[in-house]
Image (cartoon, rainbow, N blue to C red; front, side):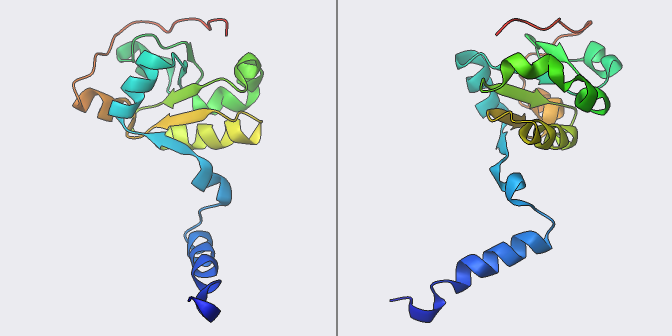
Amino acid sequence: MYGRFRWTIPTTLMVAVQACGISASDADLKRVSPEQAKVIIDGQKPFLLDVRTEAEHTDRHIPGTDALIPLQELSRRIHELEQWKGKPILLYCRSGNRTQQAAKLLHKHGFTDVTDLKGGIQEWMSKGYVTATGPFVPLKAP
């Protein structure tokens, strides 16, 4: 039915994805809306990781945040998360940009169940979900 065009579409799609600067690992990154994140937080109880600065976290964060590791420190502190490999991790930042970078770094280091909150805490708050203020919560055991 498709004949000679059977391989054209997948090849064209791959070229388009590469031209946009998106790698195969980018396509594998899980991003969820605040609504989906709320369901995950309430149901799966993932490890909730804030990758913003301490000042940003203190100003406003998602209740139950398990750790604060700013993106600029993540590569040197990634060993702190080893016990969470293979377990669900939900990342958030201000708008979703830093979490994309953090998710790529975690994937590179073998973390397989990483989800990124699309739109960050800004989008979370725009949906009316609860936030808290104050210092970050220390790491919890898996």
